[in-house]
Image 1 (cartoon, rainbow, N blue to C red):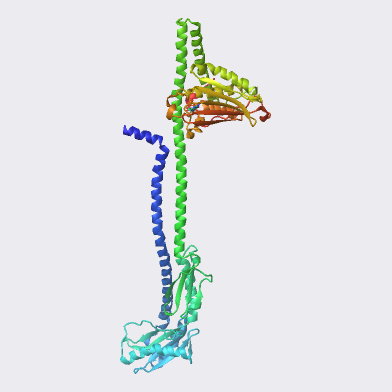
Image 2 (image 1 turned 120 degrees about the vertical axis):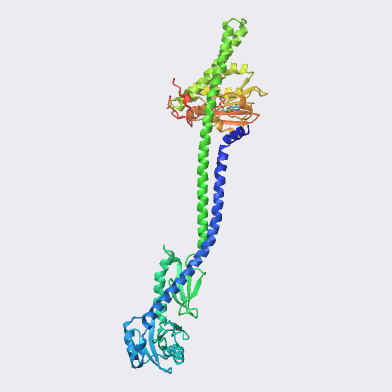
Length: 566
Ligand code: ADP
């Protein structure tokens, strides 16, 4: 029982259930994505900053390697080349080396008591120099002083590592001890660094080479590298353009009082991460929106198809019932008459009338089905002619009069105050439309207190208005549009037990639209309905031909059971 209820609920609320089934997981995914994007935003800020720091570390490493390699190439002088008279031979050693980044090379040899002899060389040509600027000489002296003490003390040194002396920022010195075979210091070689070369050539070259490697795919455009001296003066920058306020700085190897600064040109890591967050979130929201839209569309189509197929099934059973009822009435009345059970002339007339109305109903139903079939296959044609509408309505009402009377209904006809303009109509089609409206007004007012159907005829704004008002069950607002769809029947509320095919109003709509008119409904549940057919008067139709082309089929597919041939 519960299962059955659940199944019916699922079937009736397919769109809602489908939406919940899709939207809930989608929103959960979206929530998860939001959460992971938040985390990603934080990590990308850190990653961006770390990336820049790493870059500075890499530049420092490159500078260190450069000077270390130079020192290793130039400053490793064998002890024998500086002992005694040999000192001058050291220049042959220097002349074999090429050195960049140094403005002076020097070599010092120490006697046993620490007395020293010092020679200077110009690295661009490796010439021995008789005189050097005072600052350079002092810097070299300062560098060798500790070595001289080691000589005096007879200290042995394990490795020939390089040392650094930067008390004079203009003359920074890298120097190395020269060791004899007993690892005793016998002299010193050194290079005085060329600061101009460092800031004008070495650093720019390293920055040029490392930036694209570290920040590929054009990201290097967003990175500005600058060098500031001890007094915070800008001495080098990779890009002249401004840049953001954020910056990451590091000191330089050998040039410790200088600072190398890296900053973003367009966006800081925070801004970039935030932009990325917003972009990804918008994209996800858009995609979710599109997905939900698509799913709603698919579900709507599926539920429409299901409804249509259900309506077709109902149609077949409804029509069978509709056909059977008048047929059995006709048979019963016919049998009574044949068997001579009725003799009184009034009864005979009454039975005859019953037979007539039931066969009219039958004809109307069959006409509806045949017309529907023609419309569906695009074969429905209309035969237009100039018609006096008052006459047409009077004839139609007359036809229905008996049926209405039999059901205890009364037609109240409210005609026009003035004569109507003639109209160009298909007589049968308009009569059929009106009959369908009258038939409905009786069907859906059976239990109403007032068994009165009001038919009004008039003309306003060049349009002929035929309206049918009843005091029956009425139609809910949300159903009022749907009732003109083929097969559609209001399946809830008071009309549940009234049989019908669901074709009547669809045909009315098709007929009036073929006449370039319209059909409207005003209704209130429990109080009744008014259906109004609006048709253009003849002067508003222009040069309309006698017979119209086949009209387009109604929306949707015809049920296979209805492919009538006639
Ligand atoms: P049916 O054969 O079911 O009457 P129709 O196309 O004529 O098919 O009508 C469609 C639905 O519109 C009906 O099932 C009924 O629910 C509603 N309807 C039509 N006319 C009336 C009316 N006069 N009063 C109340 N409901 C109506």
